[in-house]
Image (cartoon, rainbow over all chains, first blue to last red; front, side, top):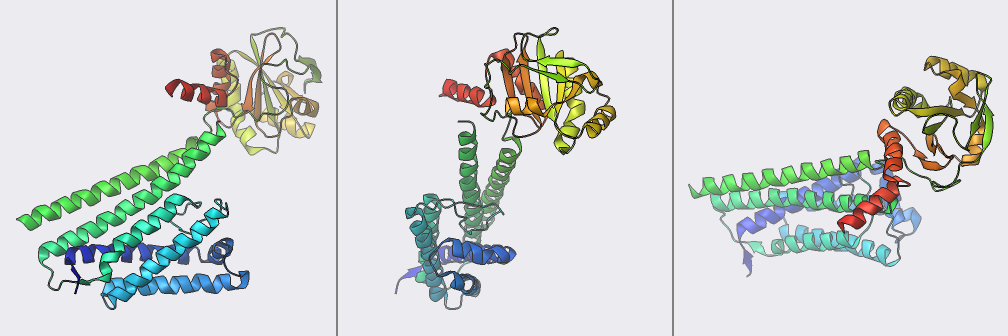
Length: 181
Length: 197
């Protein structure tokens, strides 16, 4: 059986749990816009948008629970990867339709964020970081592995936030350039 | 021993990442605050470099003032378009007054609306009635779409700079544009980027 170093598994669990918990919190904070954002993707008939939005929130909660508790870890990780790939696909379809201007629904840092290829790439990067969780972690983590795992998970989450911020800055500076062009 | 050093390293990495995050956020805040660094030319009506429309208007004091054409006195005239219903205009008025004095500009406020309210506004801000004209036709001639709008006219009667102004910085940008021989903040930025490129 393929096993993975416990520090890598810990880092992946922490990163995934933090990202999905933040996603759930963001969606709940913006619950009034949520259905509208989902409807804006124009992938589902309008009446289904609200229930689809809450289904997504429910699935994200399951991911958080699984990654935090370590119960059904492989299933939780699979669900997380499927969700990330699904979001990437939804964004990709709308980018292909030329609908760059819609809000991505990321609800990061309260800024509206438009769709971009970079967001699609970011989702695939996250999915790739979660793949080690599909393998069973080797039992018996040492103290060093705990420190490494938690440290790497927290650092990766902070860097993920930096990435999101830099992506929205890129939009702002592009808007500024256009204004003075 | 090894464990502690590893822990310290991770703490350092996380603190640094958070610091970068804070900096990136700060850059975002700056972006939103300083976006228009100069009076924004709106690109309608008589353009900068053209001669100003010639009109004669009656000031609140009763006298007639000619806009456009060679100026009788002073090197530059500043037309400042205001309205009693525009809050930014009111908050900017004291600044405009001081600015026109320090730059030796011949200030003329152009109002659009109820004459009594404009008299009150002039009184409240201690503006001489000879420097205030209620003349909607001037706004139409310059095609002023947004207030507060300022137009700088040279002694020869040419429009040397104009734009939407929201702060002293924007007003200064008009005079700076005149001194540098540029038409707008847009042109300044374009020139700067082409120099650096």
